[in-house]
Each structure stands twice: as structure tokens, then as C-alpha cells.
Image (cartoon, rainbow, N blue to C red):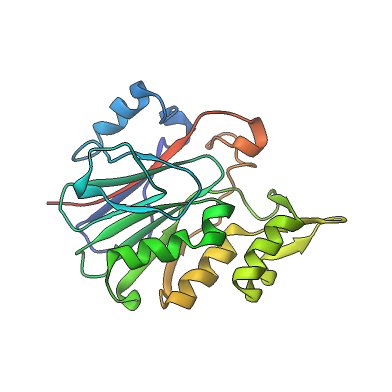
Length: 225
């Protein structure tokens, strides 16, 4: 049986804790699944009303839900969380264990700069940050149109490397490659994770692109006491 939780494999400090649910854990939009998740967390997460934007909030200042696509905290026991089912959860942690953050990075948010906004809100030098890229739709499954490619190239021409032609006016997009480019440009060089594909791994993951499903998984991160 596949595990219900994924624990990030990354060189984060010992006081940084993080997890991602799989479909076996249930739909994290549902209160029953949130209650089950609560047993694995030090507190109820600050849930967000995600709008595929670049808004970031200090999770320690809100009980949620708040309209934003990323959150951060410097306070122990406060849980940052995002929901996803093809979009990419990006977890950030300070190498000294002083701050953490989570971002919901679909193509719109990624193109607009949600990773950059989350890193800026944390407010620490980028070389101190570590990143982990959670389960998202993979580069062999994510077909997009010209408008998506244009949005990324308008922001950074180097994003062209993340697209592979897939027929007239159609492209395969590697969200992980774009995220790594954006993080590298910021100065975040220690990036782990990636390599998942929510669309092709139906046993473990919900996928909106595959099933047009309303269910969502959750990624959570916090500073332990």
C-alpha cells in the first residue's frame, strides 16, 4: 500500500517539519480529512483561499481562511499550508530554522511570481533558503497553449527551455524546470523534490487535469518547538 503522507527529503534543519498528503489521506477540502490531518500537526493550518495569484500572508497573524496563494511564519507551531491537485506546492525553509513558507504555484501564479513573492515575504537572504518542489503535473502530461508559453517568456525568455513542442500551437510545460529557474535567479541554489507527476500516478495523487476532480491534497510546513 502506498503511504498516505509524503515527507520531503531535503536538507532542512531538524526543527523544520513538513508533509504532503496523498489521495489515500482523502480530500483536504473536506473537514473530515482536515480533522485527520490535524493529528499530524502541532496546530490547525492557516488555510488559504487560493486564487492563482501572488498574494502572501504571515500565517501567524491569521486564523484563516485568507485570500492568498502563499504564507510564511517565523513563529514555532504555526502551520503554513496550501492545497493542490496538479499545481505545484513549493516549500521554503531557512537553513537556520528561523522561518518557513509554502506557496501554491500553478502556471498563473508561477508566471506572475508567487515564488518570488513568498521568498521576499520571508525576508531573509536568498542563499539562506532551501526549497522543496512537491507533487505536481509532470512535463510529459502538462499540455498548454501559446498563451501560457507567452506569459512565461514575457517574464523571462529563459523559460523557453521548459517547453517542448507538442503539435501546432501546443506545448508540454515542465513546471519543475520553471520553478528551478526562478529559484536560481533569486539565489536559492539548494532545491530538492520534483520528479512527481500527479496526472500519471493515479494510485497516489488527485489530478484535476486527469479527472476534472474537485478533491485536493495538502502540503504543510512548520517550525517545531
